[in-house]
Every structure is written in structure tokens, then in C-alpha cells.
Image (cartoon, rainbow over all chains, first blue to last red; front, side):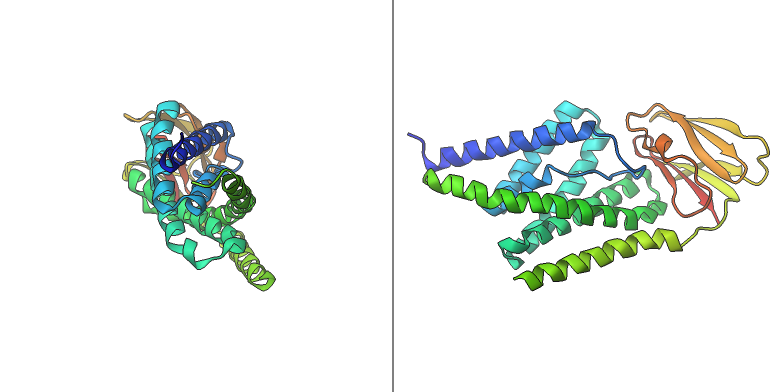
Length: 173
Length: 113
């Protein structure tokens, strides 16, 4: 008989696997613009969904597990460092503002998370290259983050109620 | 509820547009000198106005190799042995607006105003 804890653990493992697959597939898509760090960030859909359905700490656990596993699949230590920098800052910002918005405006949380993600990566890039001149990319990354954040936010907004209904039917977790 | 959504849509659209416009409006200083940094340290310096015929300089570090092509008023990364190739795809820069970055190689090329 599955307990609540087991069900939750399985759900978290499932979300981790899903976000990892999304991340790996997205990594194959070449960057559309020659700006380092511009990506769709589709895996954030899982992070935000987990945060809304399970909680902040659970979402962080899933995020860290995904980054750790990604290092196994995608090699380069540098890339993982950037992923971690962006992901951690993104999680922190989303965790902080999630309570301020109701479900209809959850896409705003995603936009803020995306902006934080790019900011984190830019700061990491500036630290790695020890070059402050990279700040010139800030407006481009801000613009890209707003667009991608809105997109992934819309996806999360559709996913969250659907998953919640699915879980409720099974007795919740 | 609709008002809240609209407010944020307009707010973010405005910010996105403003950040895009920033580049269109702020033309950087024309290319005179290009500096190449690895780990924040200056490793090469090119006089772009003196380059009559384009020439290439290979920058090799512990991180990898980048071939920098210097031409009159412009500088670019002709080729590199990094996975991402963002630096190569970026093409040439002519002013100080944006630097060229090769993150895996900790390399930055920027034009001094």
C-alpha cells in the first residue's frame, strides 16, 4: 500500500526525470542569437510547477538533483556551474515572490524567475572571465528572460491546475 | 483579475522594449583598439585602424584555442575549439557596444572607445 510519503517521493523523482530530459533535449538546440546564456529555459516549467504543487524545498531538491544529473550527461563543469548559478538565483527569487501572486498571475513569478536565472548566469560569467565588461549583455538577457519567462510561465499555468486535478482524483499526496 | 494581468503584460513589454531599444540607441565608440582578455588579464592588443589587410592571431591557453581575425575597424573570432561556438557565430564587432565572449575559454574581446 503506497503511503503519502512514497507517492510524493515518486512524484518528485518523476518531475526530476522530466526536467532532466527537457534540459538535455533543449541543450541540443543551438542558441538562436550569439549571446551567451540565451535559452528557452523549458526545464523551469518543472521547477515552478513543483514549487506550486509540492513546495519550495521540494522544488529546490528537484532542481539540485537535475543539475547534478545533468553534469553526468552534459560533461563540462563550467556549464554546470552556470546552470547552478542561474538555477539557484531563479529558485530563490521565485520562492520569495510565489506567495505574492495568485494562480492567475503565476506567469509573473516565472518571468521574475527567468530574469533572476539570466542575472545569475551573467554574474557567474563575469566572475569566471573576471571581466566586468560582460555587463553590456544585461539588457539583451533581460529582454530574452521576459520573453522566455512569459512562455514557460504560461506553460506552468496550464500544467499546475491539470496536475492538481489529477492528484486530487487519486487521493492527493 | 484581468486588470492585474494586463498591468504586468504592459509592464514587462515596456521593460523588454526598453532593453531592446538600449542597443539600437546607444551606438558604441567606433573601433580603434581591440583588447583580448583571458581570465581578466590582457593578452593581446590590436590597433584596428592600422590593419589594412585582415590578419589572424591564434590565442592558445589552458582552456583552448581561439583564432582571432583582425581587420580594418573590426575584430572577430574566426574559429575556436570550444563546444558552444557562440563566439564564432557572433561575427565581427565594430564598436564598444558588445564584447565577444568565449565562456569555456574564459576569453573576452572588447573594443576600446
